[in-house]
Length: 360
Image (cartoon, rainbow, N blue to C red):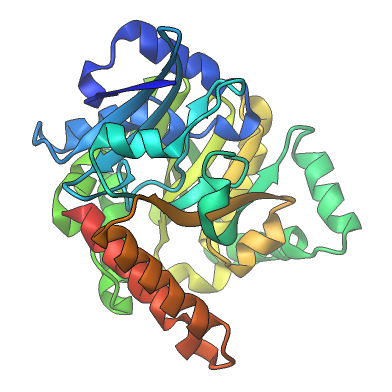
C-alpha cells in the first residue's frame, strides 16, 4: 500500500469518481461527511487559507483504492471539517489491507485522532478507546411500516407527536411543511436561533470562527452526486416554528443544524418537522435518516437502528501520543468511578479542547 497526500481541491476527477464508487460498497458509507465533496466544501469555506486539510489517497499497484479526508497540523491530525463533521473514516476497497502507521508517516504527524469513526473500520478498531452509537431511522419499507414497527415494539413517540400536532392545529391553526426550501431568510433565522442557544447554554459559538458560517451558507441548495444540502421548515401560519438544515448522501438524510422557535416549545415543533421529513422521504430515493451520535431521548424513541461508532487515536511513540494516552487514562479512571456528573468531566474537557482545535 502506498499513500499520497493531496489538498482536496487538487484531487483529480478520476479519483473523485473512484471515491464515489467506493462509497456505494457499504451502506454506512453513504454519508455526506464521507463524500469527496465534504473536504472540498470545507476548504472552499476557509477562503483558500491552507488550514491543513488533506486527502489521503491509498494506492495498490498504482491504482487508487481508498480515500480519507483529515486536517493535519505540525504534530497531530483530526477529522476534516471538525467540529462540523459527524462522521469520519476510510472509504476503501475492502480487499486492501491498511497500515495505519503509513497514514501517519504520509501526513508527517505523530498522532491521528478520531471521534466518530465507524466501528466497522478494521484499521482503526484496535485503536479505539471508547464506543458510542449513531441513532438511525430506517424507512426502507416506508413510513407506514416504520410507524407500525415502533407501535409493535411498544413505542408511543409517534402517537404522542400526532396528538401534539392536532393540539397545535386546534389552538394556533394549520401547519405548513416545506422540503428543500429556498428561503435564505429562514436559513439566517436558523443560524440566529442556534447562536442564541449557544449563548443561553454557555456552549462555544462555532459560527464565531467564521468558516463554519460560510460553510453552512455555501451548502444551501448545493446538489451534487451523492452530496447535497437542504433546508426544511415548519410554519404555523406565517411564523417559523422549526427549521433544520440537513446534509444528504445518495439515500441518507443527515440532520446537521436544527432549531425551533422557543414560543412553540410545548408542541415540540422540531420533532413534528422530523416526522414530516420521514413522511416526505416516501416520495424520494432517501430511506435512512441518520440522527448521528448523542444520547437524546427523541433519538432513542424514534430510531430503529444503531450504527456502532468508536473514538480513539493512532499514534507513534512521541510526546503528542503520550499526552493523548494520559488524557484517556484520566478519562477512563474518572468514568469508572461512581461520581455522577463529575465522572464525565474529563471526557467533556477533551471534547471541548478538540472543538477549539478544529475551529482554529
